[in-house]
Length: 415
Image (cartoon, rainbow, N blue to C red; front, side, top):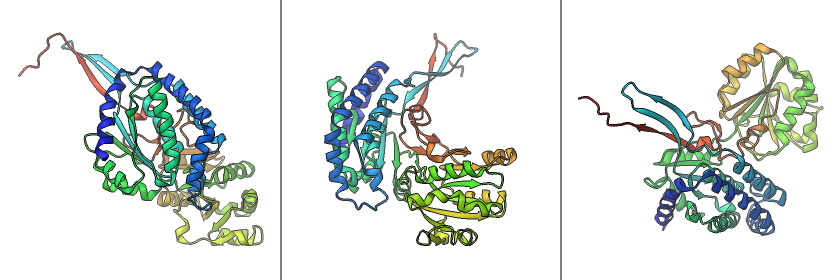
């Protein structure tokens, strides 16, 4: 059963080398239009998924589609269409002493497999980035988003058919665990596998897949407020990083505070009350906030609260004695996704940028910007927290490899 999906997409992927940049742009622009026209139907399908999930589930907001979110997906799709197609770009060229002409040229990865959870927007993002970078794709969405994913892939296939492009370049696998196992073992059919979701999903794929895997890790995100940090700037940045959208991987999980700024802590997080953010504070921060922050929202932190991706209106606070202690805490608990510093001291900032190991490191701004669209990539297939083959938001170029092209006129290599 599953082999049929893999055979179809592998065969269809061969046509991608014959589809030009203008044609892929045309497909994506038409897809954006169809998404807008089908917004009501998409929302209706999404409601079926939402009805099966508790509202307080951290995945609920990720799963939810509204007309506004569909418009944003359509806009991102159009943005991808406007980006230069990376395939065929010459990365390097030179002529050897023997007259051989060498070119290092960018090529598509081939067939990209993506396993993801309750985020139906990923369905369109992946397809848009894959077709624009010359790739076919196999999608394995979670059962939570089954109805949403089915209607979105149906719309994609409808657009492909209208443009005379083989619609088998996108395959949506059944929403069952067996499909996940089969995809992880689709050797010879899928060239690279990208898990996008919880740490549990990522660990499952990394530990069991027989295919090359690019990890798009969970976001355990810190913001360090230094003794030189500007209070009003910090207040705005921390509030935005925590509350803009709590269910995404770039949302703030832990505020690391220099001990000398404890007196400023109530003012630093005062806006959190308006969003009913629960605070999990270490002893020093707890005592500072006692009586200054609502009792029902203030808790003493346990060890487990540090290193947790909350995906909800919860924030841990860690007090540190000095900058080195802040670096040590982040080193211990970071998932290497996004980390930020609020500071004015140029030397401290420089050390933070050099020493913090993360895909995105911020100075005096919100970690909410770790996003392919925000980085000018049009969209993203995920945010890689590893160092091979890509790191950070993965856009078009990150979905390519390269090959060497050698041209000669009869040269042979001496024995």
